[in-house]
Length: 273
Image (tube, rainbow, N blue to C red; front, side):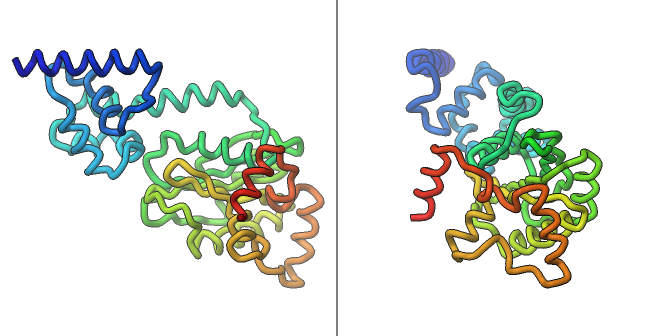
């Protein structure tokens, strides 16, 4: 009887998914339960879905967890772990096709969309160096540094050498906060200043530094303007002013200076209120 009840419940969930043409109206544990039912055929997956959400904190935490971490949760076998890890990877491949080989980034809205795409399947903290040409086309997005949930070691030499290797005209930096905290930390601000100076020394502009957390993207340049009513960094010293001026001839110093689309301008006005 119990097995028949589980089977009937699964059929009802699948029918609901088909009727809704997607996951509209599904809670996180229900979506996870439905996915797990394809890897665990003869067992009630509801308790396991709740267990996974408690363990990893959110649905995105579950789907972005490494397979070895998933199998440490009681009830998760190899098949279920692989399925959970596979889902976001397939979504990322589909997004790669949508963006094309060389997507264009000329405004903040495009920058946020592209960075969100980069972190869709990220399981740990990563710093991307997005190398961009003079027309705003992405040459390469390089996961230059991989850290942990608590700390990421950022070396200017690594970022600069990556930009030079791919002949970048300008760079967009992006890193994620697996902890879900969206606000830039003091270290994030200091690191942005440091890397901006290092790139300016080799005549490469820094467009912005995007933080991805809990499904949202935050521009450090815009955050500084709205929170402190100040530019991305303090005025450069006389010794560094020449480098900054030279770099600005090649690329805008932040995405704020690039022309936003009408939708992006409205979004930015809403953010600043």
